[in-house]
Image (cartoon, rainbow, N blue to C red; front, side, top):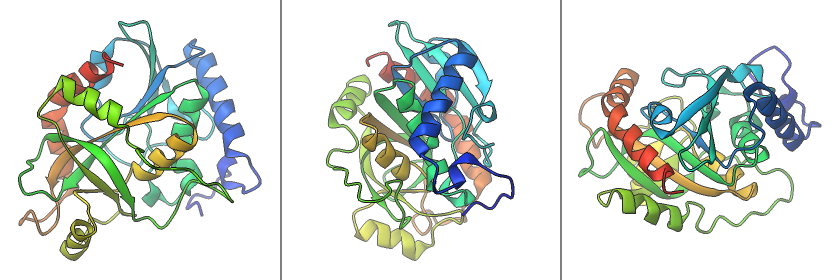
Length: 278
């Protein structure tokens, strides 16, 4: 249930979320002057500088000007939607307005950006985030590929008797393409917790025991919605810190933000190089 008092079109159970996404896509086309996008990227903490390196940004609009989008609650998310013309002639929709599950708006609003991206024509979805690392060999500022996920939110963007195959959810083809750009890229299983609190050391050990390598508060629900929409998905995490109990010092949001700022230029260059291959 939403924690906000104002009416929102996706909060009504009788509303078709795909119809709202289609309307949002129409509004994006009208506001940007671009009627079709080939791919979409959600830029999480630390990844924001990538857009300027990919190509020519021809339009940037406040996400709240588009139906279904909410103002970001988190520093590091710019709250805009941009259309970028790539050197290949393709179009990328840059989503800088992620709604997190912990904001309490409901799953429909969490995945609205992904469904809207699909409605603009995007067939590839790149999901990025800042997250905690469980592997002790990883260091803050290191990007890693998401090979799979464990959804620990106890929720799903799928409604009713909707059965979607999640085998190879994070495309092996796209992961191999990313490694052709940077052969040093490691990969791991991402665990989405509900948040907004950081995980306890015991929860991190639980995630490790069940096969997780990365812990965070986004991405998994979005990936499920992207698969439902028929998109091919690439997931990338910036390791902003080692997870609780792995890292011996206390965790802080300031640390996460700073790690993103420090790694930003290198992450942007990496992501731009990957996109150039698509």
